[in-house]
Image 1: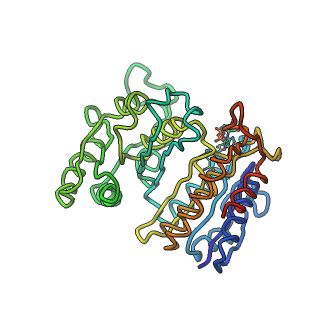
Image 2 (image 1 turned 90 degrees about the vertical axis):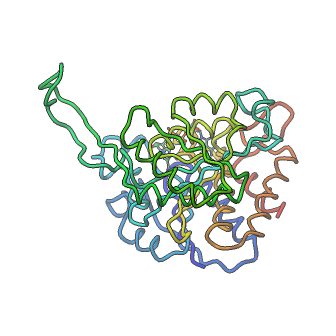
Length: 355
Ligand code: NAD
């Protein structure tokens, strides 16, 4: 099994090192190969997704990704900015299904900004379509406004679009995931306003006929944003489009208290995947040795489960994380009075020791 290791920028290299240490401690023979991506790719080869990095990502069975981005690249033209590497990998590898679990470990129930009774025991899965929608829809650009009250003014425009097969593809992934959990799937859209969403909803209803064991419900995205903070435990699996999913999955992340705890997976049709923490490169704390590596370590666990077919090893890693939390070890982002504050390296080493 070959794993492409793409640490990226900011805290990326620090947290990926800890996840690699965990993988190496499992006693398996994974072939790990590292390549620069994001700002590091730009520095090394003049592009956020250098050809050699893309080639490695294509050849590998799975990709362990840190994070990309740094304010110092903000003045580069968009195509050369670090974040383009993620969009490029998703597009080239056809990674269309993004899995974002939001689990609140009982040891961290007080870390959430919501009352413990609302979030304790939270275990939801947000599945976001990654390849379509307004982020990729053409045409997009800048122009003079062709009509309306501001005719002639400079405007920016994007196109929201989904085709039936695109929605069917993500619907099947979502129904299958829901069938393995509590068998409840909530499809989030804005069908009261958007044609794209009406097509999304109609398609979900069609696909649902093939999964009679799963209960399908629909919710408008504005209501979903409210319900996520009001009664998040009412959700089991949520499926939604690229833009709504981008926003709702970050909202769900904060229910758990720290974005530093949340893994993610982006899968293609054959379960090949890119695994990365849900957070960014955190340039504000990069190099300080305080970043929480657990989201990346848990992403490696998802990789073991979904792509590498090592469910038992995934369980081992997840249990090791629970153990270090139960021991009271906390990086600063999840630290509370009475707990032991540790840095990135100590947290990673504690997980390896717990293994
Ligand atoms: P961010 O997720 O990097 O940071 C938001 C806040 O959370 C910061 O205060 C940061 O210190 C904290 N944080 C994030 N991860 C943490 C961790 N593991 N441990 C402790 N604290 C953590 O988001 P941002 O500040 O909006 O963006 C910074 C850069 O990251 C930007 O260039 C952005 O484009 C990029 N970004 C990249 C990805 C990605 O690589 N997938 C995702 C989001 C943002």
